[in-house]
Image 1 (spheres, rainbow, N blue to C red):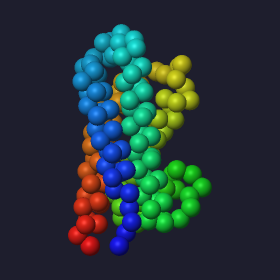
Image 2: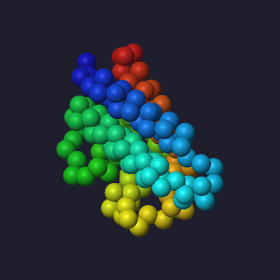
Image 3: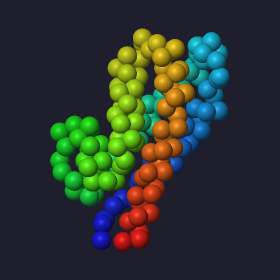
Image 4: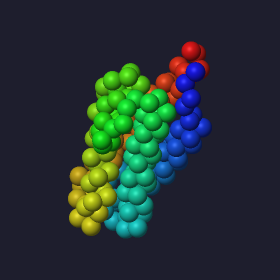
Length: 145
């Protein structure tokens, strides 16, 4: 039997869900309104960053628990999950994009282009749910074995 830390994974999925719900509640329809949010905008950025970090953490837990190899970087973790049919190719690419956006938020926080970030956030919100669905589907498939 596979010894996977499902409770930890589900807790992290819940954190992602709560963060994304907060982002959705506070993300305005228009860029001009987004730019005027001040601290709320910073909070949106931090919630997105934290959610992406949780995705990476979930992938790391699965990679470690299933002993899929010792990766030299986070991209290798994501590829290992894809290669082992835990994540689809589509969500693998989405995670790579999200990881890139997270790095952008973390390393260039003072010079974020709000217009680009606003568009990326609006377009990327569904990806969090797609990731959650794939992980829950995988966890469910383990119970059937």
